[in-house]
View 1 (cartoon, rainbow, N blue to C red):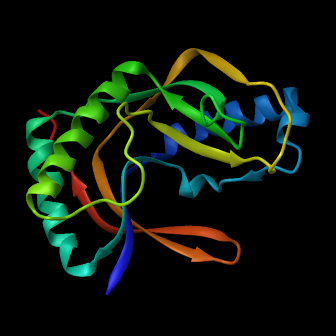
View 2: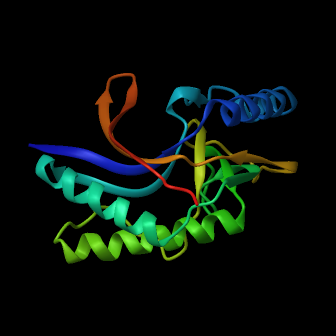
Length: 192
């Protein structure tokens, strides 16, 4: 049986609260931007490290071992959110993202590259487009199609820290109300 999988970092409660306050202030300041936007429930906020797509259920054990092995080689320090922006970059805005600092993207990009290499060694092939540079973000809202708005970017005076204690293998469930996510496996990170 196949499952729609991705590798993610779920956002801890203290970071959720800080982002929620930022989002409330931004939506109060720019109500036209947020008009008819579909907000992502905060319990679904995560940073997708790698979209795997439809994978056989039996491959989950291998994926877990790969994540564990790569995480032993690449330390993932505390991440940090630097900006609230419309997305995707260089295209008509369809979403509002909380984006990561460049240093956070570099570390997660290296981790992702290591995972991709090991997945290929085990004949597990992620589906979907793979981008050269990692652009870590949390999708906070989806904007109505065809919205004609200028790019919106709010740089934070202070970054919002995201402590990373684990990496999760997540499953997407498509429902009439939108995508729902569940944790399939949770891999704790051993910080030195």
